[in-house]
Structures are given as structure tokens and as C-alpha cells.
Length: 113
Image (cartoon, rainbow, N blue to C red):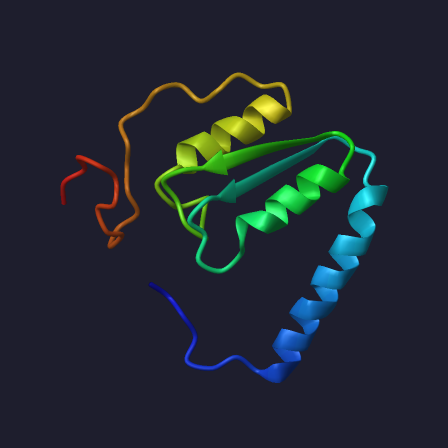
């Protein structure tokens, strides 16, 4: 679990401003939109993805069941990549031997050190 010891108030204010801007502007997004969110994200609630889905006319949501906040490098990273490829009209990645970044924990079910 990764957390900062402290977060500067300026950072919190900027995140709050960004949230307000994104919330107000979501209804104005006209382009097809892919929303990818982990159900167990410990930093951002799934309600955020649900809000975007409800307010963007042409949105598709993918909810990841085996990842947390860092979805591009987490357990469902192949699903993330394939969802993006599919969204842009490309075929999925070929099946491959799963690899893990050096030093990363063996988090996948059945994966050994």
C-alpha cells in the first residue's frame, strides 16, 4: 500500500479544482469516451466512473475486478491494454507469457516469484 506521509494543501486545492472542472464539463464531452476504473481503487471511488458514465453521452465503462489504483501496471494490465486497443478498433494483444516488472510483487493468482 503506497501513501504519502503528508500532502501539501496546495495539492489538495488543485485536485478539488480539477474535480469541479471535470464534473461540470463531463456533460459537454461529445466524443466517444472509454472509462477504465478498478473496483478496489483505494484512492478514487468507483462513483467517479459511474458519474462520468451517466453524464457523457457516448461513454463505455470497463470495471476492473483485480486491480487497484495503478491500473496500467496492476493485475488487470492486459485487460486495460486490450480495452484501449478495442476502443480504437484494433485487435487485442496476442496471448503471451505474463511478465512482471523487476521487483514487483507476485500479485497474480498462481504467479510465483
